[in-house]
Image (cartoon, rainbow, N blue to C red):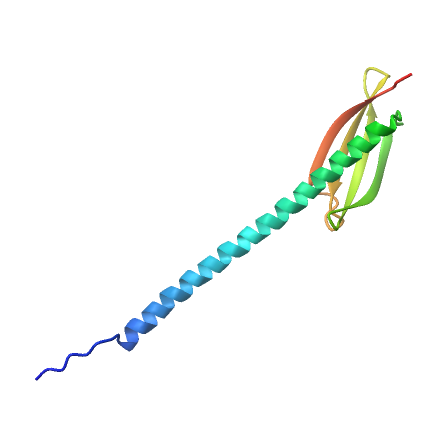
Length: 123
């Protein structure tokens, strides 16, 4: 009488565990990549808000800026950002072109947000 066995062999179990391990490793890598993307998106959004706030603050003061560059540091959403504001003349002496670059202190040469706007002399 032949005996029928039910269940899995050791080889089948090991193959199934290997497949499961590879699948879980790929899923973990995908989740980590998504987390990095989310953090980058959040930082860029905050930098964009910093740029918008600085533009609106400058326009609200109604000060006609002198040409040149200024820089500073601000906080937004619990993170530190640095900005560079480059003011240059235009063909019309009553206007100034202002370029605003916002970056993080750890990488000041890489701008996360950039805005260009114009200020007018109001007499």
